[in-house]
Length: 446
Ligand code: PLP
Image (cartoon, rainbow, N blue to C red; front, side):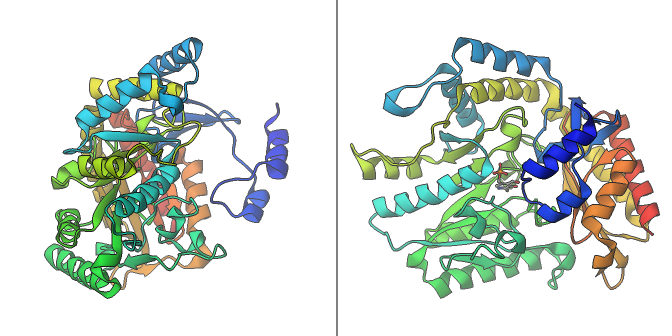
């Protein structure tokens, strides 16, 4: 089908996620047609380095035949098995066991979802159930972090702290509270320890303001992704975890982006040496080949829910929880990661960070931050004042367009932040090209 008729059909019929519907109609869709390694091609025959791994998810890269074969084999053998009625299938069981073995501490119980939003949504329901089972149903208040993103489900979107997900939706709900982000580049508090101390004090104050006996859980991304790749000082996540332990508040780590090698280790929590009470993942779990997410429950959360329910069914679950095809894909993707991709990602992550650091001499570059294959460059018009790019520049669309013209897909956030999350399979040449093409984008933005 001709690309321009596709554009017209898209305009008329396909509702795009997180987009300005009218803006999208005016701009039209760019149709991607293929992918190999870290490169994608479009309907006009253009080849681009995917510096954002789709939507920070294609961690293994495109075109792995072994993943295709695993999916096909599972479809041929048994495309679907419900987990209801005490039924199951081999692939999800093996996957749960493999993940439990690799997860921090006693996060040994895995509930599979279709993606990140329903993983977060599931944690909210599990947390509520947990406190009911403990005889404390009034623990129904949730805290998350400004600039955080926890998906766009009805409940989770209120834990998300980005205006576009609240405005017009009547969110957040009154039981959803926020503390400030660490956002070190724009934090008036300077110095790593001072930032940690300020967040600890703010979380304590927030818990006490609400009443410790009312606070159910605190949600954190080890690195805030959709808020602009905001990297906390090392020790920040651990300090927040300790405050939660002190008050008996459940600590939920949202590793939907940071999981599966994005920052180096399999889970970012490892770097801080902490064990959350619950953890969410998705994206890199299947490397985007098919949808899947996972919630990890620690022993005490699982046992409290199990014992609280007794013989009663716990009314939470989806038709496609633990889908066998997704599980078969995830098992093969895990084998690829451990067969060398995690290792390559760690080497390429160091190269990416060094390359982006080299852009600091550019007049528009205010900040460079990241860890592993997750990074951002924040643009400003005045480095001393940290003045953001004016809205007239329309950073999100203009910077994205310029990168596209240079053969690079990156994420351009509205506030003038360029986001990077390349596939872990990138070669040295591809990493160097990401950096070189970014410099050309910056030069054209002066
Ligand atoms: N949590 C985090 C930290 C995310 O970054 C995302 C998506 O980007 C989600 C949850 C929601 O995941 P999904 O888009 O798969 O629903």
